[in-house]
Length: 50
Image (cartoon, rainbow, N blue to C red; front, side, top):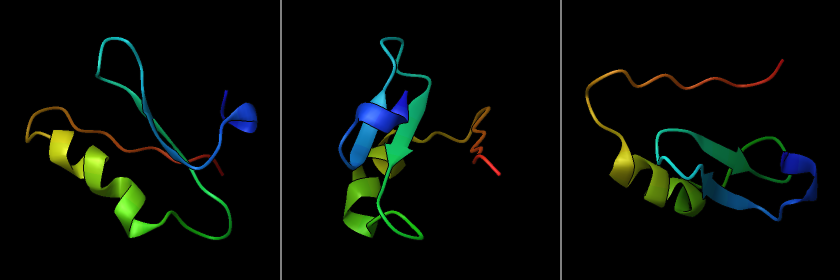
């Protein structure tokens, strides 16, 4: 999914799954602002590929 997307935070239609696309070794903190604003204290799981 992420191979054809520019850097940014992308949410699935249900709003429960986000994909963070970035260049380099880590995402820009400004790009994560939208994701952090949507995080809640219940059932938050962040996964990264190996």
